[in-house]
Image 1: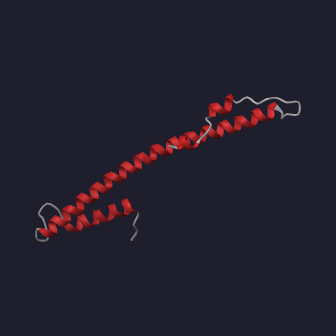
Image 2: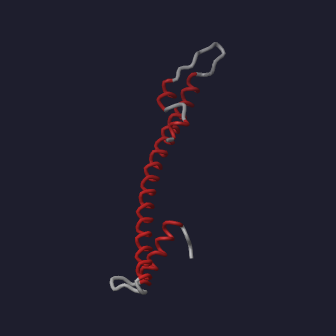
Length: 110
């Protein structure tokens, strides 16, 4: 995903050779700077990978919560159509649970 926008890898930076000219830059300074760039680049790559994994996990959790929300909503709708109450569950408890799920899934606040 993120690799589509990057031109260099940490290894590309490490392997880069610059031409030396009589009026060129200090090789030690360039190497020191590139070492810092490589460390940062590697850290950013690791952070991105970690965030992508976390994002997939959160999306999966979100899908599960939405499915549970739909299931509970259908149970309430069925109970309302059947005459107001069903023997296996309490409407008030279901409404509280749905409200809590809505807060989690949709970020709603009271």
